[in-house]
Every structure is written in structure tokens, then in C-alpha cells.
Image (cartoon, rainbow, N blue to C red):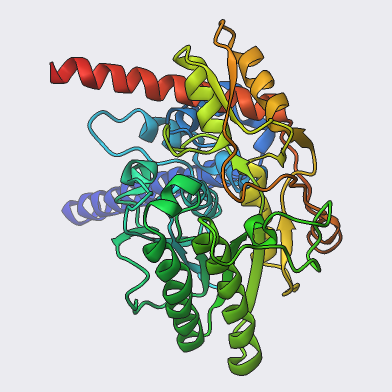
Length: 424
């Protein structure tokens, strides 16, 4: 009888263990099914979560890039709850949503001048696409605050470095943007501007050669000078004064293009050349001296809007997110000749001053001052190549871009005023 009871107790214990194991298996299976289901229906993402992410991006002055939206949408379904929780964790670093890329698809990308106006927006787009991004900047015109929202992220690295000095790093792609771009900045130190565009480009081409990386040069519409052909296409050789006040930048970019194609021909380096036309948007310097920032700051501070010369000279303005999309498309294309990236919507400087004044309001007058030396009279890109080979064209209407930029400068002015009050 004692043996029968012991045997029964033994069997009972085994049954309990089996039941517990079965329950654990069912729970694990349910958890796995739940995880699997969360990654499928993008349509089930709550609007509240999407709006929260947009607000987070706007708080960092980050645009909803057309191409960068795709990876965000693909990833949101899998991380809806965890992302929402992460964005609201107190005392911890908050990062924008980043697409997961398999190692075979993830590129190591170097952006020189990546803390600048255009470079920081490009950094945002490439980070959100899931790549590993290294930003190099000497902060001559760039600002750490433009990319500080990525500092600490496992895919991001920030290096304080001047491209005039060699750089040893392993990368797959190089976006070479390093150079002051506004006239007051590049004319402030013309020798430094020439060195950055000549020696800096030479160093980056040498790096591209050593590590077999593709290099994209951020060239400029200034290589056309004061053009005698209108609109300007990529076959036009330009009309540049080689000893004028703008020559340090104009000729610097022209020789940079020459070096790119010399390396392509002699060393087999893959190069891409973007000739960038006037660009504006958030993160421009408040006092960088360019048309858009000048007019907006003057209007917001109720100062006269200054037009140099008659105001009949023309420019074509594109919003920064359009430029970033164009640069990414060009880098990943099979087209190696120069391509204009700009908006063919042409306005006179006087018209643009009136547009800004109307958007901001106020009674500040528009005044004329002496025309600046070698100031181009007409500027309008022919973007036939970009349309044909990249499928690219500008998407952001001028009024929308202007309003976004005005809001950015309003925030910057408020920050500046608070800072001055704190100092007192």
C-alpha cells in the first residue's frame, strides 16, 4: 500500500510539471504571435502616435523628407508602443525613428560639413534611412546644435576635424559638403575658402581612392559666374572673374570639379557632382548674409529690407528638403556627369523681398543700396538632366518653404532674447 501511494504521488508531480511546461509553451507562443502581428499592419498605427513623432521631429527642426518617410512608415508598426514609451522617458536621450537595415544594405557614410545648414538635414535623412553616418566639421560655419539630437546614437559619430588635414576612416560613401557657402563667410577668409575647396577636396578624393568609396561633391551654381546663357545647363562653361571678390569660392569649386574628374579618369574613383542653386530653410545662420535670411531677419526685427542694386537681378530658390532628396538620388544613381539641383521658379530679388514682407507683415520699407561687385544678374537652372536621370524635381512650393523658415527664425530670435535676459 505504501508503494502504491508513493507511485501515485510521483505521477502526480510529473503531471503538474508537464502542465506548467505546457502553460509556459502556450504563453511563449502567444507572445510570439503577438510580436509577429505587430509588424504587419501599418494601417493600424494610431494617428496619435504619428502626430507625436511629427511633433518630436519638428521640435528638432527636422523636416519630413519624402524619401525618409518610407522607412519611418515601415518601422512604425513594429515599434509603436516601444517608440512611444522611449519618446517619453524622462531623463533619457530621445532619438528620432531609424529604419533597421541589414548589414548588407547599411552603408557607412561620411558627410564633411555635416553640422552645417544643408549637411545637418542630409544627416537626418540618412540616419532615418538606417545608415551609419559620420559627420566631420570644424565648426567654421557649422554648429554642433544642428546635429546634437543624434549624439550618442549607435549609428552616429561626430568628429571635430578640418578637411584640409588628411582623414583616415573606413567608409562606403562620401558626401563632400565642407566649405563656407554664403558670400560674407567665404569672403571673410578667402585663403581658407580656397584651401578647403582645393586641398580639402584633394584629401577626400584620396580617401575615396584608398577605401574604394563613391564621392559626391557639393558644387555650386556659382561655377557659372555671371552667366551669359540663360537658363544655365550643365554644358555651359560659365563666365567667372578669376580675380574678383567671389573668385575664392567660384574658382575653388571649379577646380574641385576638375580634380573629381581627374581622379575618376586616372584612378577610377566613382564621383558624382551636384551643382547646387540657391537653397533656404531651417538652420540657416541668422546673420549668414544670404538673401533669404537677410530679408526674414530684417522683416522680423522691423528693419528696412536691403536690396543691393536695382533688385532686377534674379534667383531661383529651392527648399532644403528638395535639395537633400536630390543629393541622395544622385549619390545612388549611375550618372556621373554634373547635375543641376535647383528650382527653375525664377524671381527677381525685389519680388522676393516683397514676398517675404507680405508673409511676415509689418511696415518695414524696402530700400536699395549699391550693387555688390560681380553679383550675378540672372540665375535659373535647367534641370532637364535631373528630371531625366534622377526622376527628380522640386516638390515644396515657395510659400510653404518660406513659412517654415520664418517660423524657424522666430524661434531662434526668441531663444536669443531669452539668452540675453539670462546673461543679465
